[in-house]
Length: 109
Image (tube, rainbow, N blue to C red):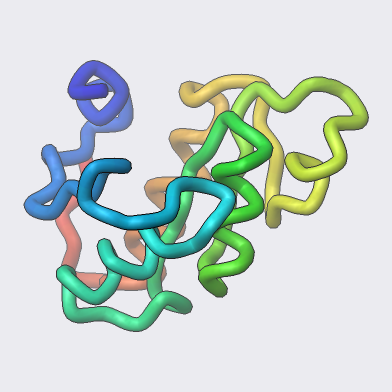
């Protein structure tokens, strides 16, 4: 996962919530909501980048902006994401733009 953050030029997050930190896994929004609570921000201020149907469903249920990566054609849940990209690299510009629009003081290379 660190290599994906490096690819985007993003720092490693200060908060990580995995399946062991919540009672319900995806597609429950519990993990994403726990992460936003630990970060001290509203769910609507969060961006979810997902490559699985359950993750897209969880992000949407949490009320977050969701980008789908490498969705299969016609994937029902991935099609509901706010945007779809063929790869993480292809999504990198949209992710940087989202971060900068959310926090103009952010330093994103």
